[in-house]
Image (tube, rainbow over the protein chains, first blue to last red):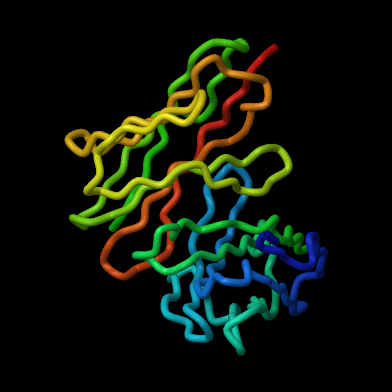
Length: 116
Length: 115
């Protein structure tokens, strides 16, 4: 069984540049989530999709952030005009819907973003 | 608003000791879901257990056990006969039942098992 994969694993960028991350969920999972984790903190929820529909966005998701899941499979998270405060680990997770026997979220290895 | 509190920032024990990680949660939802995840030094979050608010049975899985008490809003995690491989950061997380699907995580407890 292939787990959640994320690409790239590391990204270093200069302030003001745009970056895009990709997440491939577990194949049978129709729900996909993005989280951000900074050093010494727990993950913070950003947004989630059910199939291709973006159903929930956190207040943490500023206008510079946009996420897509065009065909209900992989997802991309783009950050425009990066700031040093965007430096963090960006985590993707996927799950089956609530009500199924196994609705827990499974996480990928994350993309570590460093903004210089 | 939902909140998860893991008051223990770091715990250090000697191998083979038992250790309990505390988790206290706050939610206004009557239906909710609790989770524990392990984050080893490699960084990837590993799912350990889930529990529904309407199922207060405690659970044991090998050396791991979980004590869910709605009366005190706690979902504590005990490792019996700890091993060096248990060293990691452990997170407790909460999902409400009101349609919001994102997890609310605590700040985590860094568990260090010394040989």
